[in-house]
Each structure stands twice: as C-alpha cells, then as structure tokens.
Length: 81
Image 1 (tube, rainbow, N blue to C red):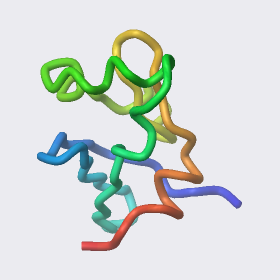
Image 2: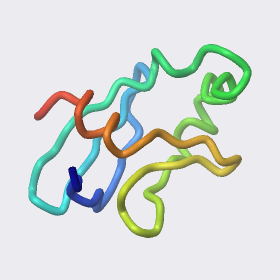
Image 3: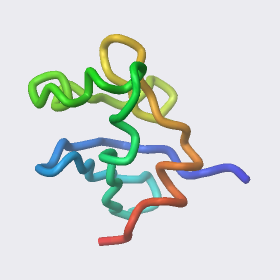
C-alpha cells in the first residue's frame, strides 16, 4: 500500500508527534513505545526529540542521528485528529 506523503511534522509533549499529510489528514503518533533500548534511547532527550523532520520524499520522519520510523507504522498506528 502506498501511504500519503507527510507534509509536516510537529513535536508535541509526552513523546507525541503531529503528522500533517498531503491528503489533508492530521494524525497523532505516540513515539513513547519506541524510546526504549539502545537505538532509540537518545529520543529521551527532549531537545533532540524536537529536532524531528520529514524525510525529503515525505514518506517518513527522522532525527539527525538517523533515527526514523517506518511510514506504515506512522500512518497505521496514529490517531486521527
């Protein structure tokens, strides 16, 4: 399945992200379940957590040190606003 592209992402409190999709949908994604373990523990730093940005093709989000979340997880596991 091809997912809509993400136009923008905003960092929210409590390890959540607000995702704005090209089709007009707005969704909230909870990152908290991902921040355990060595790979994602850096996301516990709120300053770093807020540096999230869309990947250039709009199909995902990432942070400066390569942390990312798959597009299908972002879309399927988010709650519509």
